[in-house]
Image (tube, rainbow, N blue to C red; front, side, top):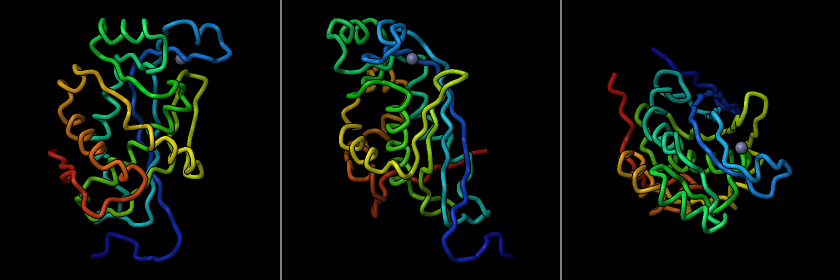
Length: 217
Ligand SMILES: [Zn+2]
């Protein structure tokens, strides 16, 4: 029984998964006064598109259920969090870190564009480190679209490689609050793996260090 097309050649099947989280930020230096001078929140939606030129044993790029583990744990770190730029005013950084339990500190401005690049690099790092469970191979992030509002989004895609390389050099300098790490054990383990393997953000690991994702139901 053949469940998978055997056709060789240059093709890429794509799948798309939506993630959501509620978070707050300030985008310094932007043109809008409301955005650059005020703490405000968004119902973020992230459209993650993965691609592969190989299908797994079921004829899929990757079972959607496999994205409910580490990738979902990653996006959950942002939910009800303050996304802070570590270079923001020191009084604000101190206040957020002392008076909020959930915060993520980034070494770059938390614009939707920068978040899209960051998400692209981190999700690719997770995929590069995870042992495949069902014959899927060479799964890559095709694009990441970050919806900040109902009417506006920013998107990054494969042609933006120079941006990914620059982001990879600073992405691991971000910090998740102790409370986030204490609550989200799956992410804590994944983040430790990524920080121990910085090269894995941009190139597949030969020795993958994250165990296979298991779907229990
Ligand atoms: Zn905003």
